[in-house]
Length: 146
Image (cartoon, rainbow, N blue to C red; front, top):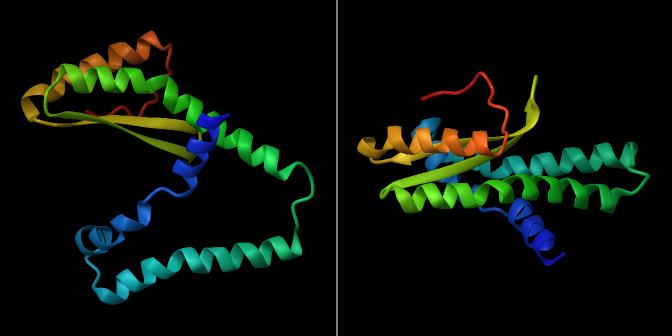
């Protein structure tokens, strides 16, 4: 139960907005106006959602549905965490990262994994990640990129 609550807060209160200045500057090449628009986007989304929910309210088992969906994502990532930590321990300078996703047209909910770090260790760490994923009976999608 405690782990589920921790996962809930990690997913809902993650620090993605802390990266907005870097995203605006380096990826979008936007100035202060672009950063302001990015910072206001969550508020606009919240307003649009509140208007939508005012017209089409949720009516059944809302809390339990949200709680279960967060637990499912947390469980999927938690199952892969030992593998990710083992690769980082074995290969100095390598970081393994995960990106949960819900909107893939073919695979739906899935987790994208990757390795980054020193070039010399990348190939071996990537191969170790693939071996570990096969040990978890993971289904690898066609987007597998080196």
